[in-house]
Image (cartoon, rainbow, N blue to C red; front, side, top):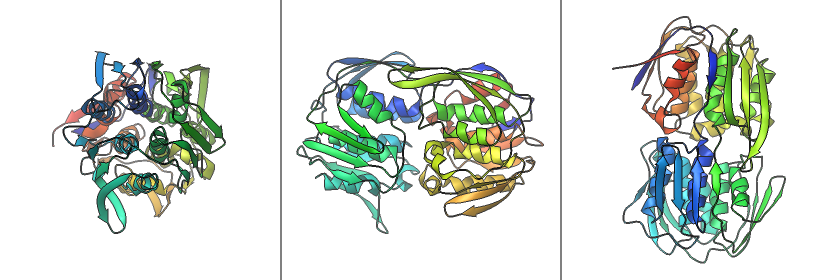
Length: 437
């Protein structure tokens, strides 16, 4: 699918974005491992999260869709999963693969996790090596000292607890090891270099698992059990980010996003945009199922370039494609370092975004761990997302400040995280149309 975006007036209106992707993955997995039936409201029916649903079904879990966004998960308990009859296809979802590896490492059967071409290029040694330290036997595809999928996981029902200092701040690695820790006897101790998103910890506690958390040090004690829950998932801040930045960078815009998750470890996008001069207000913060949510109001203004503080990088790691766009139309220069993790996402997001921005006339300099962007006006042009959903949506928002129309190629994967993105964008006043090659 290719998209044609025409210039349009400032954004106006109120919308609700779909449920949080990170929470949707995690709630399905934990509900499946719980004793009893759990109901999940606000589930994201994007391709990535549906890959996790399908995986749990292959493992013998019964999951009913009561409506498109409400799931009834019939929990089987920690030891009730069944051997899959075929390989488990994670599609484009790195979250599915890394989280599932944690629970499959402890099962009394062998399983295989595979994915699409893009997922097979993403490094997996960051989960394989610590799982092997816990006693799991995992065989992957080794290339130049790195490990990639497919992963053949020979489960070990006698995993050992681990005291592990994570080399990078990664919510996926942390979550994988915490899930494995549910099966390991004793105390699983994890230390992070930075504060990555903490959805797994919050959810484990809501399911009745006792955790000791002090700063970036987490201790999980097993054996334990999970108790079924009724769960309400807020709107995804990573999806909201496109409209937050899009409205913030266009003077005259005024939008409100309802019931968005504002977990403190996920709102780096808001903090960075505010440093750039954005007018963003959080209204009515409250807790639902242990997660903070709020309504977000954005009024457009002229942004200015900044040096992005290193301490904000982890809490905005998925949002940097749209931050690049905001920097491109800001006055002055924006300097971003410490984002080398972007090179290991669905694409090398630093290179792919830089290439597209150059096509639109932006002056920039790329570093191994970052980018320097000189703010200017954006030209019309044709860019390629290379199948990366966040790259595609970021360039869609560039049309708000471009001199002419923008065509974005290879946009099908928008459906992995935000199936109704184009519909909501047009509802706020954008002009997005699907076109043929």
